[in-house]
Each structure stands twice: as C-alpha cells, then as structure tokens.
Image 1 (cartoon, rainbow, N blue to C red):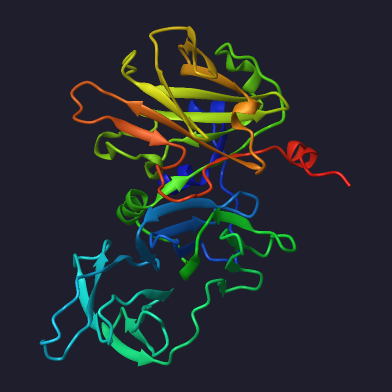
Image 2: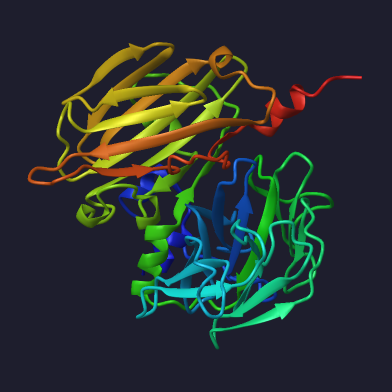
Length: 410
C-alpha cells in the first residue's frame, strides 16, 4: 500500500480526501532505482536516488547529503575516516567507514595504502563493489573493495575526467554532466539531446548504480525514506487566478501531493500519516503574476501556531494558519486563507512576476508546513523539498508558452 501511495507523485486537490489512480507498469528494460553520487567545487557530496514510477510519469527524485549506495539488498553510507598511524602492520594511509543501514552490522572499517597524507576519494560505485583512489591525483592506481567478500584488490589506474558519462543496463540509459554542471538522466524515452535534469552546478559525478528489482520490504523502504528526502518540481500553468482562498478555480489543475514519509523533515517519529498532516500545492504563472495554492489537511490545526512557509527565490514568507478566513500581505506577497469542513484549510498567494524574474526557465520554490500538536516534543515538518545546501532542482518550471516567448527573436 505504501508503494502505491508513493507512486502517485502528482494528484489533484481532490486526491487528499478520496480517489486514487493505479500506477502504470514499468519499463521492462529499465531499472526501478538509479543511484548517482555527485561532488561540488567546495568538496561537498550528495547522493541522488531516482525511482522510475512509470512510463508516462516523471521520475521521483530524492536526495541525501553525503555518499550513499543502494543495491536493492543494502543501503550503505560511505564516510572518510581519520588517517591511521604508519606504524601499524601493515601500514595504512587511511580508513574508510562503511555503514550498512539495512543490515545487522552498524559499521565496517576498511583500509587502503597510499603515499600521501591526504584521504583517498571515492571514484565509482557499482553493484557489489566500491572503487577508491589510492592517491589524490589518481595517477598511480586504485583500490577495489568487494562488499560481498570484504576483500580489497589493487586495479590499474584510469583517467578521472571531470565530465562524466555513465551508460546503464539498457540502450538509451545514461547519466551525464554537461559543461554547466547540470546532471542529466537520459532514458530511452528521452528525445535527442534531452534528459531529466537532476541537479545543477555539480563539478563531477563520482559514481552511478542501478537496481533492477525494487522489491524491498516495508522496514527497508522506511529506511530509504528517512535517508533520502524527496525533491519536488512543480509545473506551472499559464493561467490567471484570484487571491481569495477559494480553490474552485484550481479544481481541474493537477497538484503536487506532499503526503509521504520521504517528504517529512523533522518530527518524523510523531507523524502518523497523511490524515495527521499533509498538503497539496499547485502553481500558475503568466505575464504579470506568479500564483500558488495550497490545500492543507491536518487533524488538529493549532491556529496561529501551525504555519505555512513559502521560500520563493531568495525570499521567505511565513504565514501562520488563522482560525478562519483571513487575508493579508507579507512584503510583495498577498495571500488569503479560508477554512473548509471537507478539506481543512485552503490558502492562495500571489507575487508580481517582477519579484521572481529570472532568465532561467526554473524558479526556486519550496513550500513547508510546520505542524504543532499538543503534547508533542517537536513540530512535524513536511516540505516539497528539503533545505538543500546544493542547487538541486526544487522549484517551479515555467510554462512552455512563457519560455518560448522569452527566447530572443531573430
């Protein structure tokens, strides 16, 4: 049941109270899960986990800070350890900690030799093994560590290009990084030269893995949800809207549902599911205004304590949930709340398009709901995307009509 709910990544506003749609069958020639580890100019690393939900559904993107590896049977966290003493026999130049988050063992330390006092770095990930650079410049060899046998083997060095293309298990599947640092996932259904953008401004791809069988049990799935947090991209429609809190005009527009454990940031131990706290959000963008609408579901709204936060470009708007209908303004943002017996709380907001003008076809945008419940130690936070320290693609995709109009004319 959890997998069915998670597969419904885009639902209408009415989907919060009833009705569902069965997920479509998967591509037989494609894996169900794709893992990508990327590095940034400042040395930070992020792990992406992409779930292919169906042939006509956008991939579900999740992200975690650090280096993680998932092969369908285990979820490993790979961390660089402190340098060891050269007096040990045999001498070791560094330690790497591997934590099996799904297995019984909490950690496993492996060691490898190199002549530098700097740590080795992760080069590639594949099913069953990890490859480590023995020396920082990558010129003298690598160390391959077999996760199954827990044994190491020296292998010949290969060039380590900044720009990286990794071909997958089927024709037309690859993960690439372009000259602008955009990580792209290309599938057999992608058009020529096109792909699904996953993250911006990465310096290189450290490794790619894929899993053809996603039959993980509920406990393992929960661990994945706790580690990888979902990143949502909304697709705005080029339509007008009124800011009155009445969502009737949005009834025929598909919304993004935020009702899954992978979308819970803090207070996960207190979250009891979509009935406890969840919401759906949709956006519109035309020549003059950017509009958004949220339908909130909460079994116990605490007026003026619970709040919705809108992070739009470089601005953060904090909107406490009132006890009834209420309109207001926060900077350039105008908003209107209304309450409904059937749906909980609804709110609309609008900002002038000049406030979010960007030459890109992508507008950074996050919606967060902070839910306080009586006798709860911490608030529960749900969001369309986690607070990432890297430029993952969390936001609004401009309508194609507006993107075409912004192109320079000959």
